[in-house]
Image (cartoon, rainbow, N blue to C red; front, top):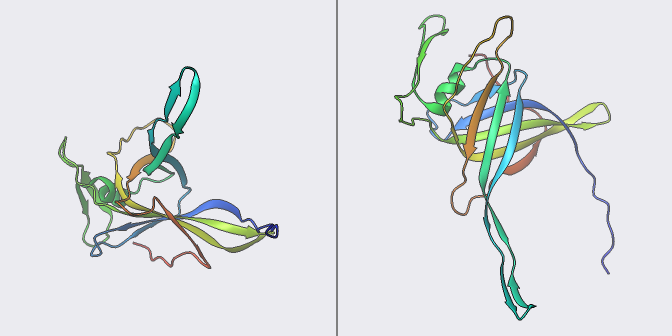
Length: 189
């Protein structure tokens, strides 16, 4: 019998940073660190079990088969990040040439999807005692956003929700996890 081992676990906490890297390498990635939450719902396709029963006796059975087809990601943020909205669903984002402040946004024409695929990377801190020992980075491939709705309420800051579908290609894993020593370096826009 093989020796029994006890692997070391990781204590993961926080949504330390979200990075969206477009597949189009001419477009700069975007990093988000503003009070985010990432919900992950695995998408699957299930093929039912097939059983051969003769006169009440089970002769053979092909078990149920579940295939992971991707993930539905729900990113919740305390700030409206128009650059991310434009990346996820397309449309036209206008900015003042001097200050680079957003001056307007027009989403894609109704019925037309212009979102560009990319990889969403979610970073969480790895804690050892009270020290951050590194970060886990889970990368979800081929992410495309769902059109965003914006509402408002008196005396309440908007909390926005962005739905993103990750659908890996044939032969591609549904996600990949790496461990890094530090978060990526970002510059202010």
